Image 1 (spheres, rainbow, N blue to C red):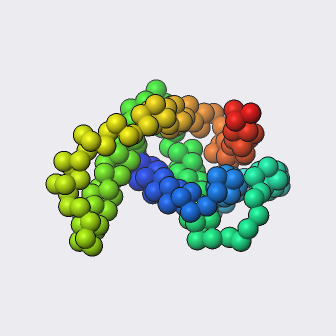
Image 2: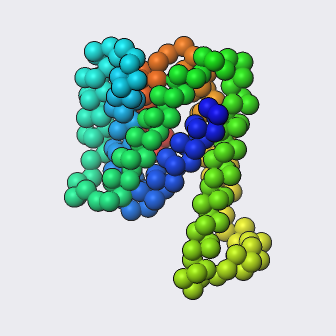
Image 3: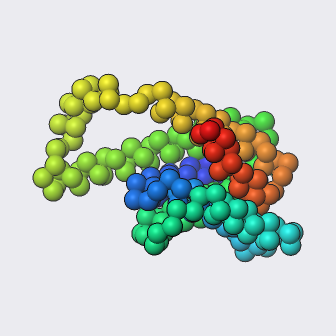
Length: 204
């Protein structure tokens, strides 16, 4: 049940993130993603957990620092709102993960694998629904889409796709789940504010 819940949260978060980033800049996407930092202690507080007082100013300072690094100006858009909502969903995912991680010690790998399986199945269901919707509005039907798969596989950027799937998703979730057995999710979220710094370092 826990793996299904967490997998569904991941699927929803990824979906909102993809739609949101498609309508905004990478810099603003990085800024709105830091709302995860603030949402985790909020969820922890609402669930009755004790949140150290210094978590709040530290979270706000972290978000401010990311804003200084990634500010690109411009008025907020619906895409920015979707990115904020995505970050909030990911924040709740971190909060729940932090609660259940101690119960699954030495079972981290199958637990994370189950989450990713749920993400894959639900993403497939969403894509199937999208194809059916587009077919009803004059687009290609399901059989045509399936028939065109071999012709389009060559255009897929397989190396980045595998890297993002294995390293930045599966491996990250795995080590995060292990970390949650020793540190609270609110602290882990705060550490995540360093992510834009690493991004800038790798870009440089």
